[in-house]
View (cartoon, each protein chain N blue to C red):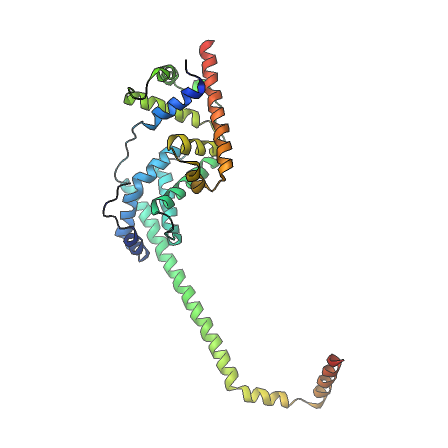
Length: 101
Length: 196
């Protein structure tokens, strides 16, 4: 009589040779459902990608405008810093002196 | 899998562009392959079709992550095995092992199988052996079940199982050893009952 170990190996060897009929095509309902899900996700992911691209370009454009605006108005900005009132100038110089110690 | 005129790269490119015919071709191409995996690892409480549907939905959803580093077939099999494993894990309650779970036909068939030679066995013997093995495997934990099926029924190597599951080689070996011991114990119970 075969031991459990041998019987197990034997059963595995026989089971591996069992013929399993596999249909060549997926059932129609299943195919339709899978493709419908894929179509939906494809459309929505395309919309998402479009939105990401739009936001990316909008962010780049905003940065460019900010930098260009800064350069264009750099003279005026420099003048504003020159036009500080006396009290602010005193505080400013006191702060700078304090930092220097 | 047969190597006919299925151009994998072309199909993937077309799917990326939203070509439904290409998506259908991919589905038709891999359906028999996925079906075999599902049948080998099928949980009790979920239908074959539902599981295949889940797997293909995942495949299409993750297709943009496929880097082409391994054959598409391997990549799909990895998704299929992991989906089956997760479905098995979701089955929290496994029935207790009972000899009565085996039909009388199978119980008497065990003795017949023991005396059957592989070379002279008939299709009925193969089917009977499959039922016996499937019955035993069904009693194991999802992890043990996966390892035993891959190792002994699909004849995968430890390395291949490691690639499919991500488990370490030593874990796979230990799990296989313990699972096999459990199966032997079940068979011994059968022998004890036969003696009684």
